[in-house]
Amino acid sequence: MKLSHRLALIGVLIALSAWMLIPRTVKERRLVNGVSQIVETKREPIKLGLDLKGGMHVALGIDESKGTVANKSDAIDRALKVVRNRVDQFGVAEPVVQKAGNDRIVVELPGIDDPERARELLQKSAYLEFQITDKTGALERSLPRLDAIAKSLGGVVAANTQATTPGTAATADKSLNSLFGDTAKKTTLNAKDSTKKGAADSTAKDSLALAGGGVFTKAIQRGDMPGEYYVGASDYPTIANLVARPEIQSALPPRKVFRWSNDSAVVQGNVYHMLYVLDADPMITGEVVKDAKPQQDPTEGTVVTFELSNEGGRVFKRQTSAHLKDYMAIVLDQLVIGRPPVIQSPISTRGQITMGRRDLQAAQDLALVLRAGALPVPLKVEDVRQVGPSMGEDSKRAGETAFALAVLLVVVVMIVYYRFSGFLAIIGLGLYVLYTLATLSAFDAVLTLPGLAGFVLSIGIAVDANVLIFERIREELDRGKTVRTAIDEGFRHAMPAIIDSNVSTILTAAVLYQYGTGPVRGFAVTLIAGIAASMFTAIFVVRTLYIMWLQRKQGAAQTLSI
Image (cartoon, rainbow, N blue to C red; front, side, top):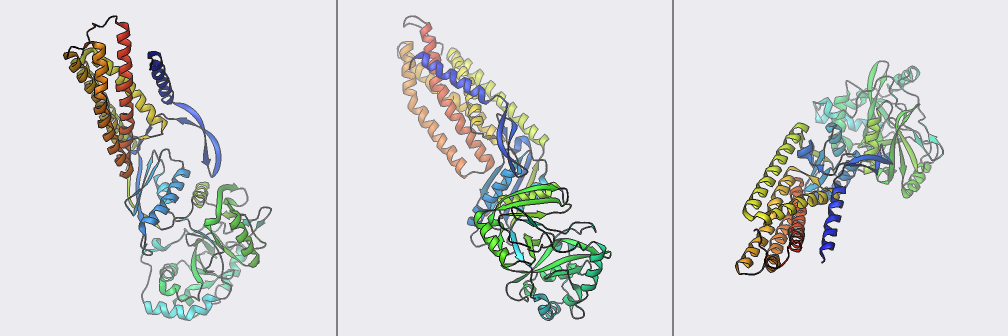
């Protein structure tokens, strides 16, 4: 290759590297509150990892408290996709979501400012179902058996009310309505708000229809719609504990299930929790939800609108057509959201969940998990660690100090030992640093503390190739060869050793990247990028500098400072 071509290639790479390392504002498409928008963001050339920037480390494991999971590895693989989708929509810059072993997921969220919200989103199941409320009086017919089972269990009480409370008690003016709508119109709840005085009086009279008997008969009161029952705040811990037991669930007729509401009502100054008996087979599930968006409605408050897939819309329309005038419960993670609306007309592709006085962030979170999908298995947080920004800044300063000292020592050794040739190697080393950082920026790699260690290590590897070349040139000069011939022979004979050593290191780093976790992978990425850049600078750049130097010298009897 001609010298002019060599210089042009080096110049182009320098220009591209400088361009990659300049901070600038870029336009990119992102999800903002569930809506895909083009936004302007400041592009950081080198993205810092959790240990350098601060943030949150979470380890998630399978929660087997509700049942044993047969194939944990497959379940974690499926859960990994859902968690990754949720994290991507959460808006964290450069998150790490990966599988650890066969039964854990590791999530790293650099720079996160709301760790509690992130923790809740990561382990939320988000399994959405649409179920018809029971209209056969299944609970009334099962009361004697339920009372008998409760009596046989003897002394079963809720020791921890918070552990069984599905939702917070609502104030008297909290909205209990859930609204659904088709493309052109909405289907509204055909029931009065029980917190209003007229409805409260009616509810108070109807709720006493079930009298006498055992624990269930005394505690449960009939609600305003089929399948709805009220449980007083004082009785709620006991009933909640009983309903959660498999013996009680199995006492209901086949294909019927208990589900608590996430809401509560105030009737004549008393707080009641709502318990529903539903058809076990859902009309559709959240698997057919194609999109979900949060909104603030001036009349209905905070809502989440959702859109079904074409197939889901066809199934939903057929099911709702068969259940006109029936009440349909919206069940999320086995909790009924608000009060079930009555189906006034067939519903196809669009719907709406009203969240009352909940804030917009709650609607954003619900829309996010609906879009990302439900977890195939329940997850629990096994380990969570916070890395503060100050701690990350200390690590960053320590890494920068180590890098500066390493470069300084390499410069001193190379110049003292190899003199002019060492100076040429230092020029190549400067370009090596530039090329390596640009490579990391181009691939959007995240620089972690182990990655910074790999970068420092690769500096020594970068000059290692020059050491091999320089020693071979010395040997050729000792044999009496001219400077030009010694340089050519030195590069040619050193090449096999350089390639062998660097390829073996790259293979080792590739294994670390394939099977390692976050910090180990960060080390491997920077090491591979550094080795690739070092081979180019040591072999191509330094050789080009030698050629430039030789062309400036006339004759073949030059001496080389090496």
